Length: 311
Image (cartoon, rainbow, N blue to C red):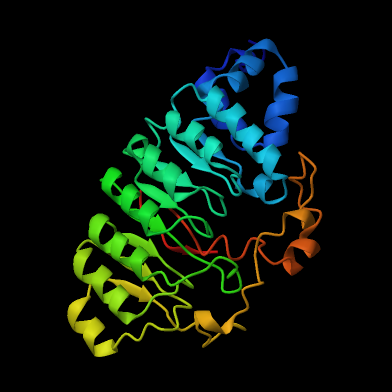
């Protein structure tokens, strides 16, 4: 001790404390720079302390699908069964989703927009996701009511569900009334539900409201076939905040049939294949790219307070 100051070696910090500190670094820094500092820091990033919450959404926006799957395998393995959150975009196949489910015994938050999983794999592994309370399956065009029903039946603790779609991502779109029925009949404990730009009508929304008695927030922006009477809402759903269907954008007033089947959000060829493109030096490209960040972040705050923070 010199001058009344007690100097402590950072290498002596507990691994869980180091994990909290390293969570504020970029993915690239955590995996390539921190391990080279000292032995204790290398052990911290190699173990579960840094990977109980895996949020690589920003990095996955710019990455090749193969890189995304490889990274997810690496980080989930490092979590050592202590995984509580996974947030990533663009899972490319059922095998990766199945691997994730095999390590999900403690998983509470699962946000995997734009993934290419199918109904069959969701039905096979949904029972392994029973601890999940928040789920985001936005822009996952290969799943249907079958998958949502399986999730609802297995995830009894589910209180937040996000199933937003993009108005021009209609290559594989279809009416989603069956999905709405699956939500209404199997996810009765929902408090927060987002269905922006879904192909549903008024009857679907009324069914959800009538069956999900704990619902506090419902997003139906861009669901142009939904016509909710304000008097009915005030009498029946005093405790529910309903956002939409009106929204001011270039797609305003268009029903699902107004779009060409050739439109798609999945333009992977335009994405950067670089593994570490997590810098923000290409913001101009992001602003003009269909399928960038705006539609993937209608809301943040899937957490303990069920926040509805606008991004």
